[in-house]
Image (cartoon, rainbow, N blue to C red; front, side, top):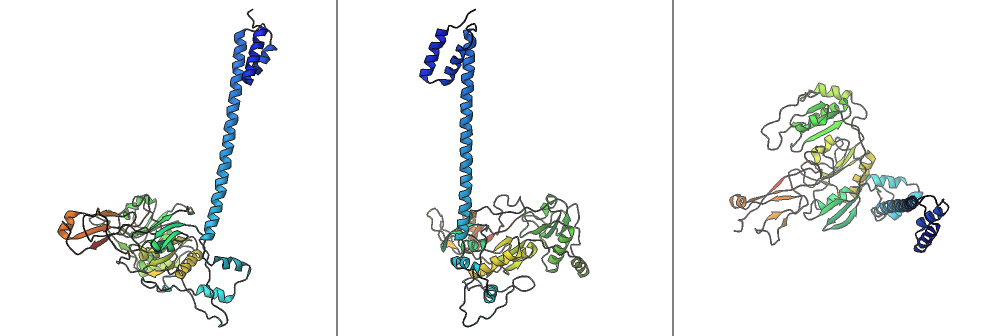
Length: 447
């Protein structure tokens, strides 16, 4: 029997202990308690396995330590992000917010409540804002008189900063919590920018089953899947459509739009005539009579307009509206128009009143550009006196040959307005509405 001498094992044990190899030392110490009748190869194999097991256990412990450290860092970053969001929300309040917070413990007086409801917009250089009519806007206010001894107090309208924009313009720079302010300072200025730096909450809605197409190649009410009817609004200028959960809601929206004169059949851009009608016809008459409209409206459910409300800050008729069908005609294709969607009527009215306070509510006219033009001064420009708009997402198409013939430069401008566009094929990434403007410049191009 070829055994391993105890003296050799003892010397190996001393050597392993001096070198700090504790797993091997323990294995050799254990081998001294084993009978010398075991072969040397078996003892060495046993020692190697013990050493490998100890190494793997050490690596597993290190991995667990690193994972615990990453979890601690992630929790710390999340706490810092929440604290920063709270701090920014406090910073974006009105400068007089300290007075507001100090007065929370006091009951508001009747005069203060009436004063909040009677706010009107301040005059600006743009077209003055006119109060919306009772038929189309839900904004209403009744001025009240204050006692002579009561000093006027500026009310503070606090908004939850759901969206935060980083504004860079000649007259304002920094973050702002409302799109009304961001659009007011950036859209009229060519070189100004507004970037969304927060992640807004987007509530999920059930899949729509019915669609009311107000302006498209074939207006009407359709039931089914949206991609079957998407072709009816693709590339249609100022297309207007909306999805609904029930057929009754879609029929009511279409009847109201037809009664207000919003329904219109428009061919797609660069298309000859209207496209082929869909396989499934409209669920309602595309030219309903007065009796049919009254019959539809008589069965209108209480919540047919839904929970979504819109505040139009700049448009043909500013105000607060309960349905996109009414808003589309007031902002689509209107230069520098701004509007925002809200989940409740109170939030929309609060945002509109605060915009009035800040002088950000204006009535605009369709077919007129409110973008301030600038003169090109770059050394790379081939011509002198070229009118251009260096706005973000603008593609300038400058043709020297065309300019020499017609003396006209065509500038295609893309305006980003707050809102939702359902057509993925039209705007899959930036989700903008597009407005095309043509500027005619007098003078001859420089050779």
